[in-house]
Amino acid sequence: MNNGEVYRKLFVAFASETKDEFYKVAEEIIEEEEKKHNNKLAKDLRHILYNGFKVKTSLDQYKKSLPIPRDVERGLPLLEIKEFKRDWSDLIIEDNIKKNLERVVLENQKREVLEINGLKPKKKLLFFGPPGCGKTLAAEVLSTVLGYPMVYVRFDGLISSYLGETASNLRKVFDFIERGQWLVFFDEFDAIGKERDSPFEHGEMKRVINSFLQMLDNFKGESIITAATNHQHLLDPALWRRFDELIYFGFPDKERRLGVFKKYLRAIRTNSVDWEYLVDKTEGMSPADIEMICLNSMKEVVLSNKKLLIKNVLEEYIQKQQERIKIKDQIMSRK
Ligand SMILES: Nc1ncnc2c1ncn2[C@@H]1O[C@H](COP(=O)(O)OP(=O)(O)OP(=O)(O)O)[C@@H](O)[C@H]1O
Ligand SMILES: [Mg+2]
Image (spheres, rainbow, N blue to C red):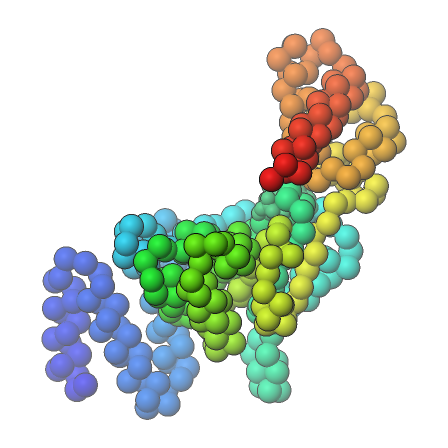
C-alpha cells in the first residue's frame, strides 16, 4: 500500500460505525511492516493495538474498543477480559508449587534473554486437582504479577451444538489471544473430555480435541495459556504432554491450613483461638472450605455484637462445614 492508500483506508475506517474496519486496516499495516522485516515496529504496533490499555486511561475503556469473538449460533461472547489486584501472599501453597509458578513468571519476564539464546519461556500450564484449592486463584495471581490481563474462557461456553462450530469458536479464541499478551485461562477444561464420552457424540469432540492440540502446538503468541480442571481423569492422554508445566493443587497440609485460617481471620482478634484444634479438625478440607468457616464465624460474632467468642463459633462452623461436605460427597457418589 502506498501512503495515499493507507491514509484513505484509515480515514474510511475512522468514519465507519464499528471499530472492526479500523482493526482490519491496522492489521494490514502491521503485516506490511512484517513483510518489510520491520519486526520491532510491527511488534510494537500490535502491542499498542491489542494491549494498548497500558497507555490508555483504563482497561475498561480499552475493553470497550476490542472486538471480542462471539459464538455465531447464540451470539454469546467466547471470552471475558478480567483484571485483578492480587499478590503472592494471597496464595497459601506448598513451596515447590510456588517455586514452579515463580519460575514461569521469571522466564516470561526474561523472555527476550531466553530468545536471544534460542530458548523459549514456559507458556502452557495445566492446573489440576480438587475444587477450592487455588487453581483459579493462582491464575489470578500470575495475571497480576506479570501484568498480563486475564482472558477468561469457559470451555463449556465454547461448545456448540452446531457441527464444526466448536472448532471454529476455538480458532476465534486462539486468533484473539495470539495478538496480545494475556494470561489465558481455560476453565472447566475437562468439558471437552466429558463431552467426548457422551452417547450423543458422533466424532465431533474428537475433531475438537485434535484442533485444540494443533492450535496448542502451533501457538506462537506471547500469552501464557493456563488450563484448569478438577476432573483430570477425563482428559485425553494426548493432552498432558502438550503442557510445559503440570501443577497439582491438592488439599492443604497442617501448616498450610494454619496459614489459611490466619489469613482469613486476620481482621479480628484471635487471642482465644486454639489453632491446633482448628487445623486438626479441618484435615481434608480445601482452603475454600476454611475460608467459608472463617467468614461465617466472623459474621456470627459481628452480628451478635461481639458477645460470642470466636473460638466457640469457629468450632461450630467447622462442624457445619463437615456436614456440608458429607452431604456433597453422598450426592456425588450417587452420580
Ligand atoms: N491456596 C489458597 N490460598 C488461599 N486461599 C485460597 C486457596 N485456594 C482457594 N482459596 C480461596 O478459595 C477461593 C476459591 O478457590 P479457587 O477458585 O482458586 O479454587 P479452584 O481450585 O479454582 O476450584 P474449582 O476446581 O472449583 O474451580 C479463592 O478465591 C480463595 O478465596
Ligand atoms: Mg476454579
